[in-house]
Length: 203
Image (cartoon, rainbow, N blue to C red; front, side, top):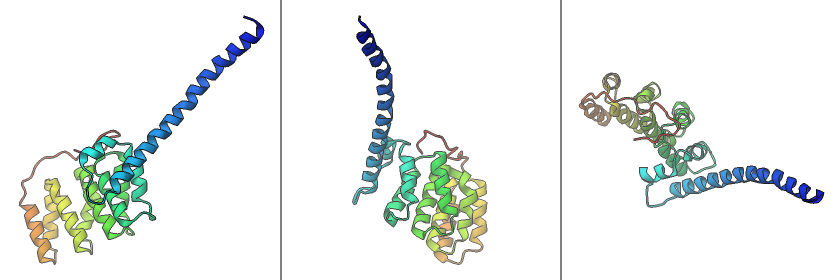
């Protein structure tokens, strides 16, 4: 092989790895775009509510997209609420942190707050009592009801103690009935759903 041939061969050897390296980010971007499209399609449904199986099929890669949508004030209230509910399917540190952020933010809209309460209870389980229990005395009856049902769903001694304490203070006859029903549930030793995992999907 002459000198020119060797130079061409050397150039090709150097170029091949570089081309492979450039292809990897492209594939990653395409995957992210695909996940974004799937998430948007599920959130944008008019008649059908996405199932757990559909979110599981998208996978935890949906979490960053859902968090972005939920926290974006430019999105519609309905879309943000749907994103919050969807995050309940993913007990990851990122989803739990985002939902907690909504729950403790005094500026959260009532609609988004209610969705976040339901989703956080599912994603984090009884470990979320520290941020959910204050909502038992929220000024909104609908938020209180969601908090009562969420806390009651944990069916732990601590949860029922919180509900009993609220029962003595609750002014709404309807919510006292809800509290009574939740307190009638048997205590079960259920582990907090969620020690958040980086790749899990909520049961």
